[in-house]
Length: 218
Ligand code: AMP
Image (cartoon, rainbow, N blue to C red; front, side, top):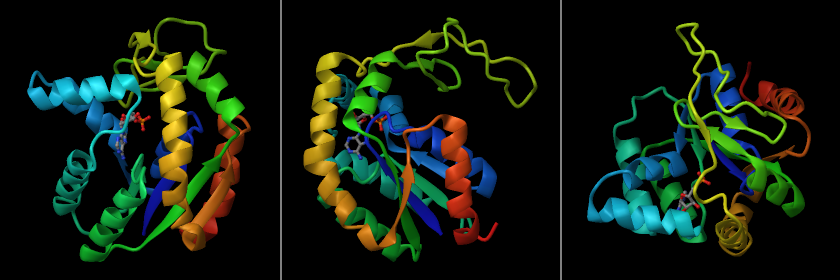
């Protein structure tokens, strides 16, 4: 079964997604990360995506859905997926659901709930590692990443503030969430697993695993 992760920007869905993926063996499809990769390309499309992301607007459905369809087409059977950052609109939800049906995949939604105040506080203070993409909150004061990699070495990547974590883009992104994403979330009401995203990362993980263990038969 696949999981579709929802949550306001800054809710920690990326972080929880990774923890859930590790515990139950999911592959994560992170739409924003895929788009940031494309935005680095020196092509017309890359430049266009970069400016859209930096302004906090949504990339066109056509581009996003093409990336998702390509991903699903090439997916090996038996691999369960966490979809992070898709769908962000009703239209994307309809296309994604049609794709899930086409590839005969069952799914549930997971939503991490936080207030807008928490979202704003987290987005204006968080930093990301350039190398491993780990996200650090305001209480981490070093300039390099202290994650341990698979080979046992420290990552030590440089930390930076995402270009769309600025006041104007944050406002635009939160508006897009309430106007465009909330109606899409409502379509999954009867399949939705709700988790409180306000506490610390460890507390959120524990609460999420308690809810997900029986559902995912761990
Ligand atoms: P995220 O990393 O999920 O916060 O996404 C970063 C940015 O990528 C968003 O602000 C959008 O500009 C773009 N993006 C990510 N997912 C989507 C999507 N499903 N539809 C359109 N744009 C998206």
